[in-house]
Length: 358
Image 1 (cartoon, rainbow, N blue to C red):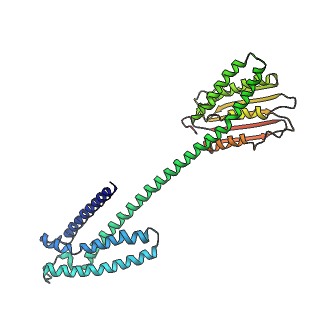
Image 2 (image 1 turned 90 degrees about the vertical axis):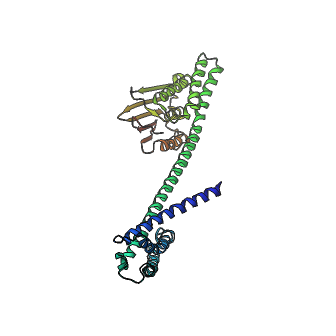
């Protein structure tokens, strides 16, 4: 099958080249005998210049141009081109002499008007060589551009796959924090036979659905992210009880805004994991605001003054920063500030109403 395809391709190429040189022969016939009515005599005369034209053309497009011009060896290209032109000029002169002998019988009056000047003959031959060489260069440039575009697309595709794999890896690192903390809370309440245990199981089930299934989507609505942040806070309230004070402020927004899943929730989880005031109480303040195509997320929590756990270099925060770099690139700003008794995070996301960064 492969051999037959090669043979078929070579046959097609030979047919096209033969057709092209037939057109060239007709061009020579017209060019050399535009004032002569003897078509056969003119064609016989023109056929003497076809071999040197073919040889010179193929020398340029298959040897000189690929070996010296395309690799930018301009000196060698100039030297070999000059040599080819000199040799071909000699052959043109010899061909013109024999053509005149055989077609005109040494009679000057019987020669064609254009053949009275050898320069015109050379111009016609070299014009064909120049046109064929220019076409060959255009074909090469087009083929190179197509190959570069294909290679570029393959590289982009590979980068996208690596990006997706890295994002999945980062998400898998975030999931255990939620599961471990929530299960610990339910376990503690179940030991005390607390009446809210069943409600917490339902809330955890909703969180598990979000973590295990919804996060496989490239984006989720901001409302869904806020809903699960609320569920998570409700779970933690049952564990902390009166030791937890949460101020959750959300400004109304009309637009159906979409963000990457599990983008804001880890910040909240981080507050519960590391935050705690000197008196044992945990104070958390959360604000979500949408304005002028920007999402502003502010979160602040209390911490003990001597606590060193809440570090900007924690694995959780590093994962969040990496996800932001992958998903939003230059369309976000993350500010993290550690104060003596508070930890402060400010995240700004830029987005277009018709664009999703994920």
